[in-house]
Length: 506
Image (tube, rainbow, N blue to C red; front, side, top):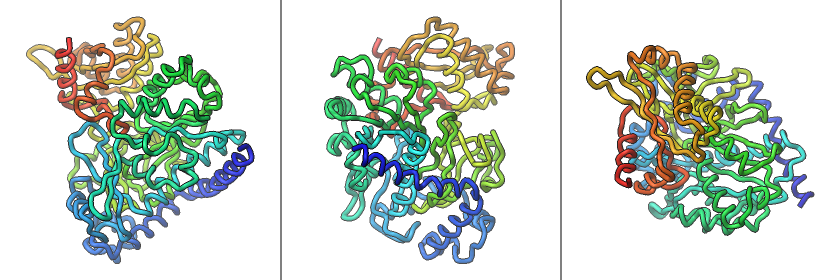
């Protein structure tokens, strides 16, 4: 196995030269992909609608094609779901990634072309391994197996030719043979619908394996880890899997979970690697082991644009090209892809932390923020505040959500938080104060509204009972990797719903 590991590591590192190339010539690479995408789609229904044949520059493209979202593309996608082809993209679309993102009742079906599978999602997975092998040349990852916490949906058949499932299910069903060989557990468990039974089965199936890497959302990884330790009677995961060396995560901010993982995997040699992979595409990989920034991957069949958040509510907001962005400003991402998404706003917000090369951090969602009083609190602010509060009170957070408290009579407004702890703070009131003080330090708008409690009073924080969010997701039939608790909301729907559930169980 050591020889095989060396061969795989060598193969993976060969890709580094190409990554360095787009880091050096980012605008040329993006321009090339722009022309490839436009040329490829000129004879599709969409390409003819906007006369792609006559589009010569990104500026013409921006002038001619309006910004899109799922609702505007939905009529085209529904026809593709029914089996029609050559609508948004020329090659046959047979796969759709069912995405919910949050606990929204509406599902999205994102077309996944053969090109987006190979040139984007799988390429991203291979690049992640290439970067890891380059940063850890003495790794032994390929001497064992990768434990993958896949999605919660079986692949379903729409008609003779079309299938859908959440992204991880679509990827697992299309994996090359060599990748399937290195993955555990087998497909029958990985694609199980019932997440409660699935966690038990995964734990039982993997404790005898030589697991060298784990990939999955932190919340569900922790649930699985606890099952494994319960089954084996061990005190940490290294006693079960002594060769475990890599954890790949994404979808949510890792900072609030870091301390828990240090306890589950007590090793300074453990490597943590973040990826930014969504149903719409694979966008970023943490390429440095001493930084949490992610390298924006520019040669995956995606052409990028960025809308400054102050312009997000304009009727047809002006978008910037890669060469026009600035450091540390909030942007909504707009993508055009080799899966047939055109000027599509995915709903995520990012900041650039470096412009040479282009590195980013995810700051939140375009719809997930609290701005009931002009405070503009985004998820990045919340995560910083919670991380600091945990650090100073020894707490560990499992999940949380927050929403506004509206003005009532003479009372100022505020923010109401529901937080479920894995480890309780040693001083709850101090936790709330540190969280509040940190929010004031990182967000001047929030700080201004908090001045003498004039517009915003001290946050109201509920210490939620164990399994509150798990039970809430379960009640909504939303257990699984694709479903996430909405961290922040600009209305009270989620806060009120969860508080009602808590009251009903008391």
